[in-house]
Amino acid sequence: MDTTIPDLESASAEEVVAFAVERFHPRLKMACSFQKEDSVLAHMLTAIEPRANLFTIDTGVLFPETLTTWKRFEERFGLSVELIDASSPSDPWTREQCCGAAKVAGLERALTGALAWVTGIRREQAPTRVAASKLERDERRGIWKLNPLADWTEKDVWGYIFKHDLPYHPLHDQGYASIGCVPCTLPGEGREGRWAGEDKTECGLHI
Image (cartoon, rainbow, N blue to C red; front, side):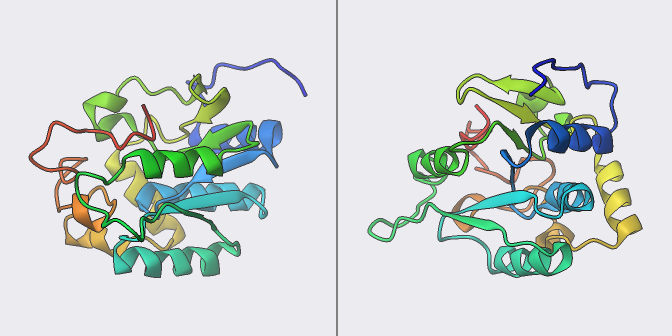
C-alpha cells in the first residue's frame, strides 16, 4: 500500500470518499446512525463501492424511527448494515449511562481490524468539531479517520439529499437536528438537543 497521505482539505466530499475507498477498502468502515449526513455518505460510498462496510451501534434504546430508517437504508443502498450490540439488558440505559463505556466499547469492536473509518462530522455542528479535518489520524485507535463532509453546511446536506431523493431520518422533520438514543435526545438545532441542560457535548466516540 502507498503510504503517502495527501492533503485533502481542498478536495470535495466525493473525492475524499473516493480516496478512502481506493486507499483503505475493504478495511474501511463507516459509522452510521442514520442521520442526514449518513444518507449522503452512504450514497457516495455505495456509488463507488457497493460492498462498502457500514456499521451501527445499537444501544437498545434507539428511536423506532431510527429502526425504520435503518431498513430504508438497506433497501435503497443494497447493503446490510453491521449491527454492533451495545445494549444493557441487565441495566436500564439511562441518560446518565447513555454514550458511556458500553457505546465506546461497541465502537472499538466495530473498528477491530480497520485501517480507517468514515464519519458524518461537520464543523458547523458544534464548537467541539470546528477543527475537524477531512483526513486526520485517530491516535486513540491507531487508524485514519475521514470526515468528508467537514466543510459542508446544513444547506449543502439537504440539497444533496433532495437532489438524489435519498431516504433520511423522519425526526429531522420534527425539529431534531441531531439524533441519538431516546434517553438523551430532544429537538434542537445543531447538537443542542443532545444531553440538553448538561455540560456534555460529545458522546465519547469522537474524543
